[in-house]
Length: 229
Image (cartoon, rainbow, N blue to C red; front, top):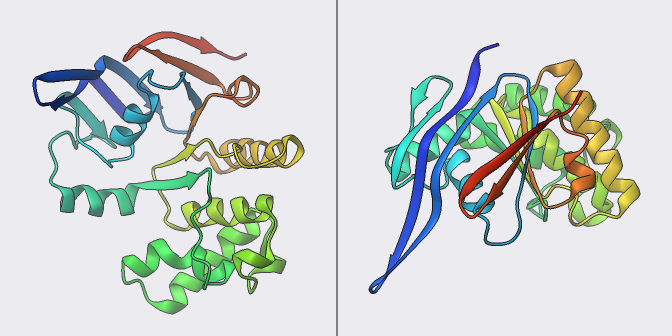
């Protein structure tokens, strides 16, 4: 399989006054197309910083990051924004759906930002909502949906963009265990049948154990990788 994400000796540090904090200390990580991978780590371990770099929300201080074969390590803010919209779909713990928009309109958003024609936006958003089991709820607004349904709309929004990778940050964190498992089952189904590359950042071992590979981040380094059978 081809590599979607290639991180080579990624380092990230922050400097305040005379203090330098090293958040990432030399991360090497490759993710293949079609993988379902979990990134785990305690608070302060570096997993959030790693997620921000993978998601093109920040640049590394040094090292190389290739996304779909393109080195994106030193892009400007504007360049990162363009590539992020084209290549990465986000799913967050707090959903981040726009409250005044319907499920369909929320799912269309990535293509709205690209100025895609309304008919094409609607067609692709409808297809994504159907994949996540939300076809009957397309005209409902977020306050008319349950937490699990809102997360499904968020996943549909990520799918609509046709991304190279879906980056999910604690996607079950705001859900009870049953609804959280429903969301994980959906991720696994999309990964298996749609070959969607999914990276889940989590502290929940029950989530991580369902992924094909788990990467543990500790003290700014990858300490081990566990492969599931």
